[in-house]
Amino acid sequence: MVKNRRRSAQNRTTDLGRQGRLHLKEEGAVVKDWGGRLPIALTFPNSYYVGMSSLAFQLLYRWLNDERDVVCERIFWHKGAAAAGKPLLSLESGRPADDFDIWAFTISWEMDYFNVIEMLRQAGIPPLSQERLQSSRWDGSPWPLVVAGGPGITMNPEPMAPFFDAVLIGEGEEAVPEFIALCRDAVHEDREALLKTLDRKPGFYVPHLRPSNRDHVDFRPVERLWVRELPEYETQSVLYTPDTEFGGMHLMEIARGCGRGCRFCLAGYVYRPPREQPLETLLGWAEAAKAKGRDRIGLVSAAVSDHTQIDELATELAGMDASISASSMRMDPISVPLIRAMAEGGTQTLTVAPEAGSER
Image (tube, rainbow, N blue to C red; front, side, top):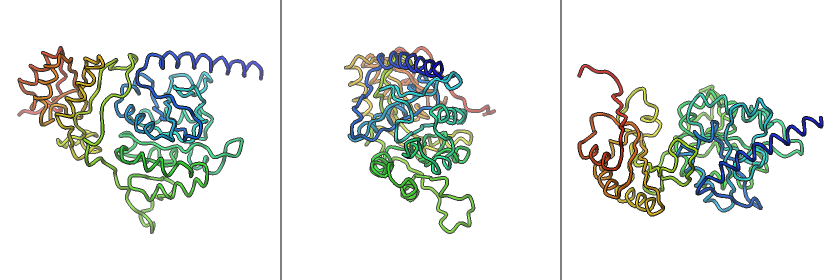
């Protein structure tokens, strides 16, 4: 017993040291005092390297911490950590995962489903929602409220429905303030009443309150949430770290959704309809990033070259001496001005997505 406790303490010290090194290299992280605030664990069921490469994960981190009475800290999956008996700790304060009142998973891919279950077990939290509803922690307090969102769950929540108390279907920007308002006090009180309230709100799916029997008298389809006015939100980098795919690059979501309607593409359906950030807004973000020494600008979108002002944007960025990077582009909308501007901005390679073979 003593040996196991000593090993557990050593594991926690080692994990805190590794996480501390990651945290020290970050720019833009938020550290709050826990006093009187609702603690939320923003959880990515994959590595730090992968999670911090996600602009959506960064934006959720900012929106949650923008709420004054919320303390949001990040938790990541670590390969082999559960098997080695290592504790699951938050990045910012090193607190155990089960100290948080809410676990908010953001899921991008189906293969991360397994990591969700592993993380719950690693934290000592019953994986199944019904188990959590029918039991409590050692001190009688309720288990953390476990919720999820992201394209990997929006596309089909059913495989993971037994594990989550609630699922957000669609885009989360407009749901965050209301979700926090509902959970602020109720998360410590009547959990079932809270879930019933969430189930009546647009965008929220509470699996155990929604029987699969379509003859159920109260059956209602879940209304997918989506942002009507994308320019109302700053969809740009808020955190920088060298330990990601994009290093110190400043990422800007220039558009959301895609109007192509390719049958095999998830983004073309989950993020309908297509919406754009205005050229003036994007240039303002780039200028601010440049002023802070961020010369590398990454353009994020399901279809970067489909932005109606992509030529002008690339030309202006090149004129700022910014190095431009973009996700893969379709062949047909790529223009000479766009290629020239990207070359002047230092881009040496361009990934072209032909989508599918055709004799045309």
